[in-house]
Every structure is written in structure tokens, then in C-alpha cells.
Amino acid sequence: MVKHVEPDQILVKMPSLRAVKSFVAAAKYQNFTRAAEALCVTQAAISRQIRELEASLGVELFKRAGRAVELTEAGTIFYDAAYLSFVNIAQAAQRIENQGKQKQELTICCSPAFSAFWLSARLPGFFAANPDIDVNVITTNNFLHMEPGVHPDIFINKVSDPREGYHSIPLFYDLIFPVCSPLFLKQNPEVATLEGLQNTTLLNLTPYGRSQIAEHVDWGVWFNSLGIDIDLNNGPEGKRHIFNANDFNVLVQMALNHQGVSLGWHQLVAPMIEQGWLVRLGEMEVQYKEKLHYLTYSESKKDNEAFNTFKEWFLQSVAEEPTAVVNQKK
Image (tube, rainbow, N blue to C red; front, side):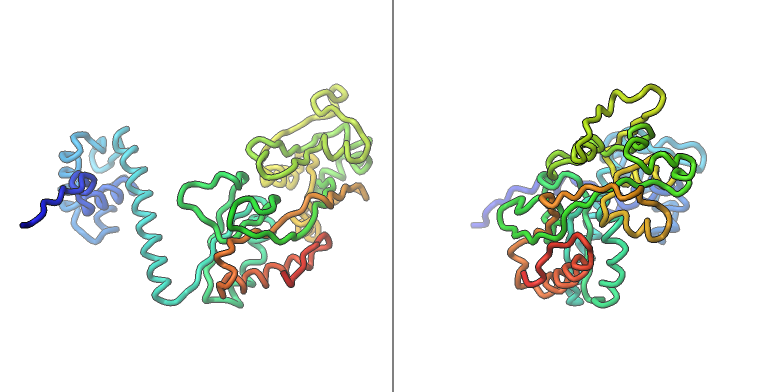
């Protein structure tokens, strides 16, 4: 007796993948002719597939005006979902293909600032020495709540052992000092003093979206560490201005554009100081030796050749930092 198997309703209701592919191409180029050229088919085939898809869904996906097309509200919703699905399929296929070529892959999670100002400058050297290892970088300021299905092999953050199954290696501590552009310093020489700093435009890193990383350092905390009690919201009238952002990249860009003074974390801003893009203001600094950064890795990777190659390279790179506390034997 043959057992009856219920059809999978998701697969039964799924539109034709060929039709969806035609739709995504037409939506991307907003032109049926260009979509046909991209997929190496005729324009008539694109039009037919989209008509069939619209009939299947029971809605119009495009507003047509001559040769130009524009997505309807329903079309926009469907495009967002369809395009993301195709991206996921393509990436999965690429990973499978890479496995077939025995190419190894690591996923690293770190803050946007660390990725932009530290890691990106050094990765080309790693790739040159290790062409058989691919590195994927995911940036976030909220390390404790990753998206479903995202399981990085390595975290670079300020939380030791944030989750079960991971081990942490201390890297370096925070050395923080004020920085600005050479032009801003020339136009405002008084900012080279503590008194002058309290009466200028301060580019301030806010804790919004960052509270789960570690203790937060903004201008108020930094001044307080030097024994100065300052109310950022109530400065001398017309003298102190505060610009707040929760993205350090934004503050650095504003400092480079001569808009004010930002706090600078040594490991992030040192290259820009060496290049002359930013200047350090005097000898004012605060060392937070209790605020460590960590390399945190999945214990399942400890015997993985690609991971150990990357870890060794990374720890050697970090050891060159003057604030390093890393023990390379770990």
C-alpha cells in the first residue's frame, strides 16, 4: 500500500522561480529590455513571466508607463523578499563551491569602528599570505543579540566570554585622548588646553545602542577621570557646543572635516595622526587599563587550521600596539 504524503504547502504555493527571477531583474533595472539582456532572454519572455507571476499573486507588481516600469507597493514588498532570498541562495552556492575547492572560511564580528579603522588596513596583508582563507566581517554594536542564524567564529569586542561555548583572550586596554584636524587646531588654538576643551565644539559618542558592549566613555566620563566635573548640557553660553552620535565613524569624519574635537581611541586614530589628518591635543590622556578588548572565539574552532592561522596573525598584529596586553601563547 502506497502511503499518501501531504504536499508541502509552501512549495505548492511558491511562484515559478523563473518568473521570480525575471521579476527581480525587471525591478532592479526598472526596464524589461535591460532585464532581458541581463538574463540573456527575450523581452517577450520577461513580459510573459511577469504577467504569469502577477496572475499567480493576484496583484499588479509594476506600474507601466511606456518602456519604463515602476514597482507598485505590492511589488516593492515582493522585491525586497525575493531579492534577499536570491542573495542567500547565491551565497550558499558560493560557500558550497568554495568547500569543493577546499577553501576555508572564517566569520569575524566586530564594531564598525574597529573594522573601518583597524582591521581593514591589515586584512590585505593576511589575504596575501593566506590566499586559501576567506574572511567574512560582520559589524555590530550590539554583540549580545545577533540575528538568527548568525554564528561568528570570532568576536572582537569589550566583553569577555559573552556566551556559552566561547573563550576570550585579552588584547589591549583603552588609551583615550582628544583629537581634531590640524585646521581646527590652527583656528582654535585654545583647545590644546583643558580649559579650552571645555569651551569648544565637542563631538560626543553617546551610549544609545551601545550599552551592552561594555562601560561607556563619553566626554563627561573622560573629563571626570581627570578630576573635572563637567555638565555637557550646560556650558558657557555661546562657547560650548555638543554634537552627539552613537557612531564613532561619524565623529571621526566630522573631526576630519574640521567640525570639532572628538575623543580618540589610540588603536583607532593612531594611523590618522601619523598621516597628519588628525592631531592629538597636548599630552592630555586617560588610560583605562581595566577596560580591555578581547578576541573571543568559538571553542569548536580551536583545532581548526584556518582559525589558528588567523588567530596567530591577529595576536601578532595586536602585540605591536603600545596598549597591548595580549599573551600570544594563549
